[in-house]
Amino acid sequence: MESVSRRDVSRRAVLRGAGGAAALLAGGATASAGAGAAVAAPAWSTLQQRMSGQVLVKGATGYTAVAHGYNPRYDTVWPSAVARCVSTADVSAAVAFARTNAVPFTIRSGGHALTGWSTGTGLVIDTTLISAMTVDPVTATATVGAGARLIDVYQKVASAGLALPGGTCGSVGIAGLALGGGIGALTRPWGLTCDQLTGATIVFADASVKQVSASHWPGLFWALRGGGGGSFGVVTSLTFRLRPAPTFQVWSMPYNMSAAPAVVAGYQTFMATADSRLHGELSFRATPSTGATSLTVTGTWIGSASALTAQLDALVAAIGVRPNARTVSSQGYLAAMLQEAECSSYASCHLPPQGTIPRVPSAGASTMVYAPLSPTAVTTLVDRVRAGLAVPKATWTGCTVVALGGAVRSTTTTDSAFGHRDARLMLHYLARWSPSTPTLDPTPFDGYVRGFRAAMAPFCGTGAYVNYLDSSIADHGAAYWPGTYARLRTVKATVDPGNLFRFAQSVQP
Image (cartoon, rainbow, N blue to C red; front, side, top):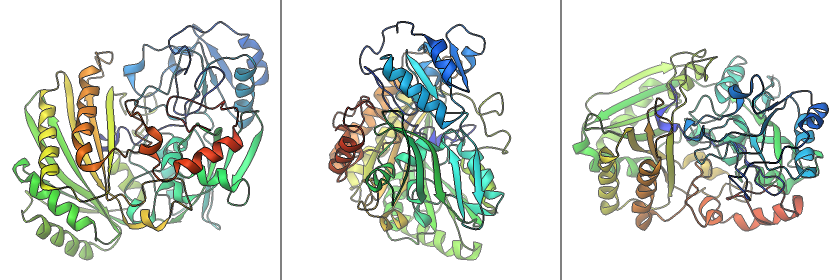
């Protein structure tokens, strides 16, 4: 997810939080109280005096360039000020200022929240510039600033011959991705991004700074591994365990849509017991302007090309229909991550002006699947893909079906707050429209992805991935954190009893 990867425009969930009478959302947030109201002008100069970074007030030179996040559908929301933090001390000062002055505030890491919770009308505390990275090849660890972009993390660790499991969106902020889970090509072989977390620096509600690990604040450390961002404090840096970078076999098999029922059925059966070194997903797309639909089975393998041949032969046999083609290429770690992100080069895999990834208006939702999809469920899924052709003015719509299992099940909910350890599949629904018309009425696009989720609910339940925040989910605790939400609430009550860090779908004390 780049020229923004189609598979993952929303695998970019960002650090959320909440402040004062409002919400501090990671990735961003609008105020939980008075969301659309203008904020009375506080003494922004006071905050500037306490920070090394800049405080850009609406109308100031440079403000427009940093006012918005990734998704341009929310460009009509203008913050009163943006605090461009360059250190943990800056974040601490901004949190203290917002709390003391009852200023609604939002925390922005990557700014990719599909809910619009990467911006607000109050203060945006922007951690983008807290992006320094250090890699220790001896201990095979990396310490990364919260605002570092995923593709930069990949490049940094790859330069040391190491690798980190992550997502597929190159421009997403590392904090939001890791705190909510982190699903990508190395998930089945090595686990989620949050499973690699060994420590973090976090700013608490009283503006104090804590170092968190398995031996310091262990309950909070557990919560940060999959509990999402923004409910407990503001994470400003993360330390990850790394492994030697593997060689990837990147593969793809396109199918006719007429074969879709057989492909879904065979794929889910095969991937349920497949070698964990095999990553695979189904990419369904519908293009209203042409009336075309497509289906491609894609993935990666961290093993020899000859061993992959046997894996793909077995997958095709399980499907029972031969693909239109089969392509395989051998690639190094960074090259494979760039291809997963749909980037032609490392330089291009950034938002303008550094790169060429466009800001694309989008709507998204997700479902976690725990049991095999029945024939009726498969028919419903395929029908909903085709229904995307009727979404007016959509550039494209669709669904990606991602296989989980493997190493995801190796870490239990006792070890981390990620609640979907036993999920077999993740369904990711997406609708995008033209960047030239970003402020189109989003109702048809939201209606499509939420209708897709609702159509699958009778077969799959209501579980969802917290990194694909969905404001339409009513019982978000049960949806995002099945089996772990009660413990998350206990942690919340311990570290933030006053519920300073709150937003529409935060963990409640």
